[in-house]
Image (cartoon, rainbow, N blue to C red):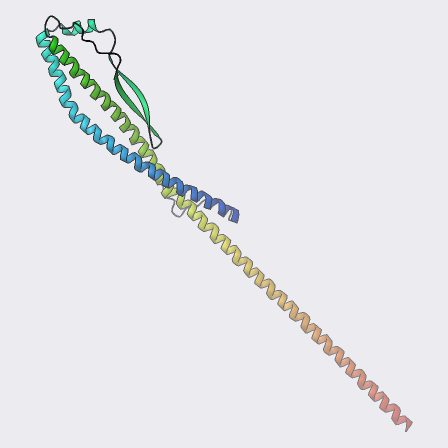
Length: 252
């Protein structure tokens, strides 16, 4: 889903413009951080993949060698060597423990093999085939160690694969949906604010024009009143002059 051409439904105000700009800044920073995280996980993912390939290539030879050692031990010591070994084993000497490794905020499970105590050379195969049995034990211990390492690598591989997919989805969502919507919303708010500003400017111009017309009207009315007053004064003066002339004529 693309965010091109879409925007959030907001009230176009200056306050909301500031909020949208802050959200866009946060989304940009989050996108950059998630992109760096994705790159770091991808690098680790490739390194683990190379280790898995090399471990699987060596595992074939190791398992082949361990099975061949078992065949040699059975041939020399007899088919009953398995029961003899099981009877002589009390506790496991080679054990596995797990821990977690943090890679760019992703916890990867790690499996480690360790020896609990010392591996003692018991009396298994004392009658015959003792050397082949010890060689078989050594070969299988090495095979177990390789299998533990491979299990750790594959578990980390699957965990990283899922984490990379999730991170890439978030990066794509921020880049293609969230940020375009916020940018379109900011553009919309700016356009509405500019339109309101133009409306206010036009309204002020109209008010100024109206006031100017009113002032011109008042000035014209004042001039007309002054002219009327002047005409009346002239008329009175003429009447007084005519009256004075009439009085003089009667006196003569």
